[in-house]
Amino acid sequence: MAVVSLILGILCVLALFDDSDWDADALLGTGLFAMTGMLLGIVSICQKKPGNGMAIAGVAMTAISLLCLTGLSAS
Image (cartoon, rainbow, N blue to C red):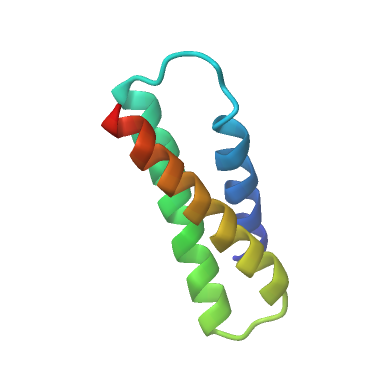
């Protein structure tokens, strides 16, 4: 779960560098990826399984992505 959280976090952060206009579908899809990554990371941290560092990095990146997506949806 930690690896999946990290991968989804990386994908969400990379998606933020897209220069094109963000429509509602792109915001929704990226937001769902970010929320899934955050959920998996939090569950992995709570279960104290190996890979806590990856889970923490995934949660941090998905949180940053969600904050940026919130700003993009407001504009």
